[in-house]
Amino acid sequence: MLAASLVVFLVLSVLPGDPAQLILGTNARPDTLAAIRAQLGLDRPAWLRYLSWMGALAVGDLGTSYTYSVPVAELVAARAAVSLPLALMAVTISISVAIPVGVIAASRRGRGTDVALMGAAQFGVSLPNFWLGLLLILLFAVTLGWLPASGFAGWDAGWLLALRSLLLPAVALGLPQAAILARVTRSSVLETLGEDFVRTARAKGLTRRAALWRHAVPNAMIPVITIIGLQFSFLLAGTVIIENVFTLPGLGRLMFQSIAQRDLIVVQDLVVLLAGSVILVNFAVDLVYGLIDPRLSRR
Image 1 (spheres, one colour):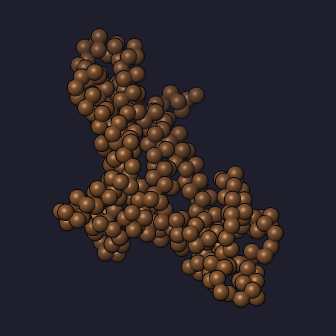
Image 2 (image 1 turned 90 degrees about the vertical axis):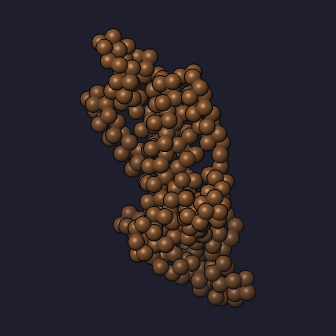
Image 3 (image 1 turned 180 degrees about the vertical axis):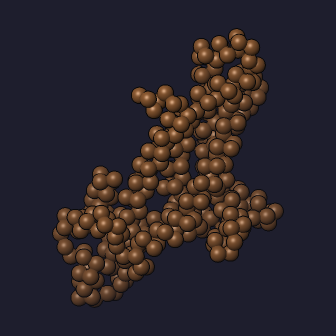
């Protein structure tokens, strides 16, 4: 997180563009610009601004947005109420589709079912999520009228309406990730099926299905869990395009708007918070390893 904070601060400090100029417009007077720069602390040396920013972060102060003139913590909390459920829905869709597909493909290796499922997964890997989102809008919103094409109803309108607003973007995010996860699941299950303990289970009289689901699948989950953790981090931090396609007021759209408006403090805080979320997810994945395979917790 410290490295991420240093990189984002250096990048934003050397990029062209003046936040004060963007706030006041191109016709602003020089003395007014100087006053705004002093108010925002932009007239201080870069190293002093960095230390001041990090000191504020250490006590939980994210600062105040240049553009919205509200605390950044409020902006992040409001937008996270959209992005976090969206990421959870997308991961749920990805897992629900990918694990059964990967296990079925592995259990029918080389057969028509395996070829068809992995062909579909290969197509899904190469499918841009924003293009899939546009197709979903055309089908389910424009043609059928079942779901809203854009916008977010808000949790105050009821959780059913809010979830309906997130369903299409969640599918657009989750299906391409499901294609990747299905291929990883298939490879991991196939590798586990070749292990001695699976052959021993079959020799003791277990059916092929029982040996697959009782022994092979649980022991194949370690690499699958790793990919799920990485996908959740990606979905939480990488929803900029999808949130703009569906006009969702989430963290990705906030990041996009803040970069366009040169709202440096918001961009800096978001990068550090998202880096922290990736670290926390990876830590949670490490803990799950011990639950799935108790041998790992004893090492």
